[in-house]
Amino acid sequence: MPDVPSIPFHAKVRVQTADPAKAKINGRLGRIAGRTEQPNDDGRYGYGVFIYDLARVWCCNEAELEVTGEFDEDAVRISEQQRLRLAAKNAG
Image (cartoon, rainbow, N blue to C red; front, side, top):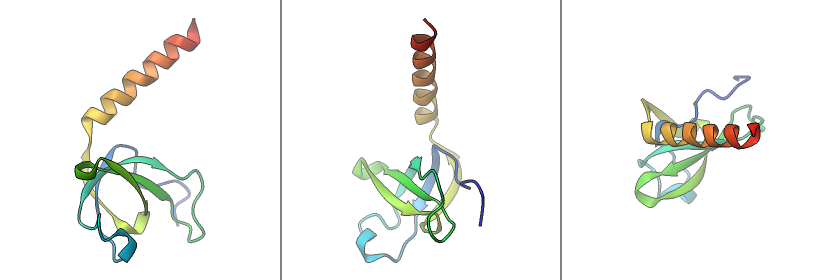
């Protein structure tokens, strides 16, 4: 199992799960909005996935996510703007 999460923040993913509790999001597209700091008991990381068409974050296991190879460029840009604002605020 990986020592670090294998899916980066803002990566676009498609949920692929057989979990009946997540039937509502199975097959839907989202982006990585968060992740656990430590691996779960199975050695894999958990992720918060922002599901675009539901405008909600769902908790998913790494094994339930198919990475598309794309990034949500808007989320990356907003995240960088927030980082710069916080750095400026803390510098002064």
